[in-house]
Image 1 (cartoon, rainbow, N blue to C red):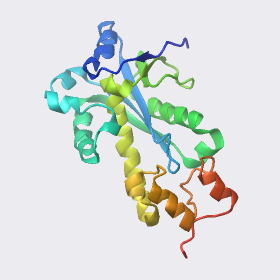
Image 2: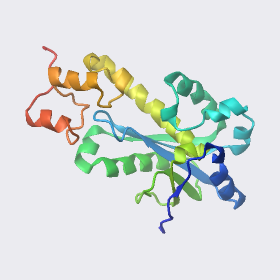
Image 3: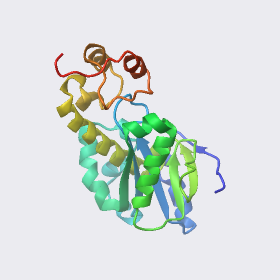
Amino acid sequence: MAKSPARTSHDSRNRGTIERSFLKQGLKILGVDEVGRGCIAGPVYAACVSLNYDALKSLDTKTRALIRDSKTLSTAQRQRMIPILHQVCRDWAIGFSSVSEIEEQGIVPATFQAMLRAYETMKESHDLLLIDGKHLNPMLPIRQEAIIGGDGLCFAIAAASILAKEARDDFMRQAALNFPHYDFHENVGYGTKSHLTAMEARGITPLHRRNFAPVTRYAELGHYFSTTI
């Protein structure tokens, strides 16, 4: 698969321009994005999205403006957008790689695998996949376009970002019920101060990535979670 150069732009007014250029060529396009790559606990998630662009156009301006990088939205905004995205998606799918897979393969291959799992669940074939960032996914058997800042430039990537983020956050909120001292419902696996303090006091859980610092140090010391603390 031939590689294409990464595109980049930081002007939000350009959102959708790249997609329109491909749609005018008659191409069926997908967007893909990952969530959780930089966490120290929990799986990495990815979503793949095929948008109905006519339905997208029918949204009011304020609602359409919320289809952007999931990190710029509040939890309430993302949750409000989920049913709307379901309405404007022709198809969408979620994939993930587990903590053990992240430890065995490394985060980059595990992220690519999560994307592959989402892609393979899509019902229809497509011509082009738009991927956030500067790296293409060697596991995906489809022409790809890498777009730096793609979740701020392409509606399909942004929609994938939101769907993946909420799916992963929901997983971590459920995990917080089993490990209530780590604030997973708030930090969703990122290394916040309270999260690091909990690891120091109570050890690491099966959800912690032992190949990520500072988790590695606690794993080497045998400092594992105990319900008796």
